[in-house]
Amino acid sequence: SEAAVAWNGTGWSSPMSIAGAQDLQAVGCASSTFCVTVDGLGDGFYYNGSSWSPEPNDWGSVVSISCPTASFCVSVKGGVSMWNGSSWTQPQVYGTTSTLTGVSCPIATFCVAVDSTGEAIVWNGSNWSAPERLVSGSSAFGGPSLTAVSCTSATFCMAVDSAGGVFTWSGRSWSSPVKVAPGHAFTAVSCTTPAYCVVTDSKGNITTRT
Image 1 (cartoon, rainbow, N blue to C red):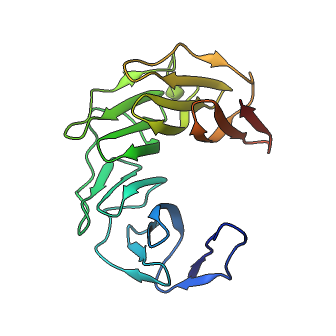
Image 2 (spheres, rainbow, N blue to C red):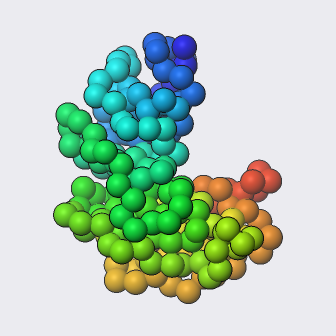
């Protein structure tokens, strides 16, 4: 079976077995007593602070999960699935044209999801926006794709692409791309505040924004 480890502020736990899980894809935590992970078959597993158990499933394998509360999560890959505390919605594409690669929800009324063609969609608490293209060109023709996003609030997000580009959300609009590390394929981003973000790339490099 698959396993998970947890961080308690000073150290990592021993691996905790997740019975029945196969090829875990992503994890999201709202608190120390609620996390959810979904495996490659779309099966959901939930953490209550001490153990993992299966509950209502997602609708397919995912690459990213974000849970601002135990009663609201979003998971993405082929579409967007949403958790209301008891069940997941069937995935919807909301106008996106390709695989979604990342999602970040700092609060239940605001999320951003990004996809492999360089588009982003925004959740306002009741609806998802139409896709907005951030990256010029299409990944289908060799152009860069958006690979991850991190939001600290409804007024700040950072999205990164596979060509070393960074985009920031102001609460109303996205910035023009800033080429932070041309030629580097950014793979993940995490921001604690608008003034502090850490970005990783496919070659094992770490870039910090302060």
